[in-house]
Image 1: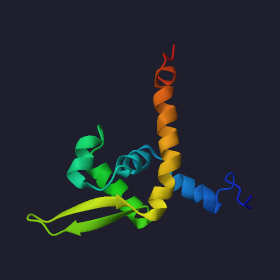
Image 2 (image 1 turned 90 degrees about the vertical axis):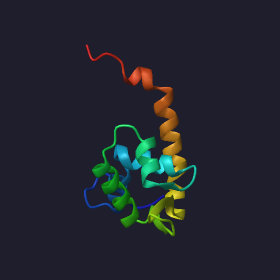
Image 3 (image 1 turned 180 degrees about the vertical axis):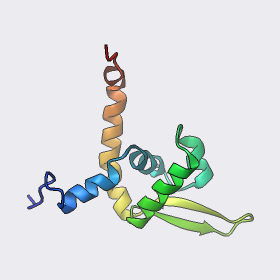
Image 4 (image 1 turned 60 degrees about the vertical axis):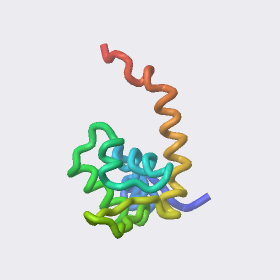
Length: 113
């Protein structure tokens, strides 16, 4: 067991959780779990995400070494995104979380009344 305490604001583990615990990061990592995708493919696949938010999310994940961007030698120029080994290590927990969300979607979407 580690000496990390995620309840402390300066805990490195909490910083890591903050990085990946937003909706779009989880969805992008999950989406890239089946292999590399171009930006346009991700945007078409992920319903409800704006182009600006997708760009910000991809940049954040790349900056934190969870994904990598590879420029393609195509005309017009293109790029694809793929999980890094670190990103692939996150895929297991993200897949479990997605499965849990799918299993309990109806319960969680219940009326607030």
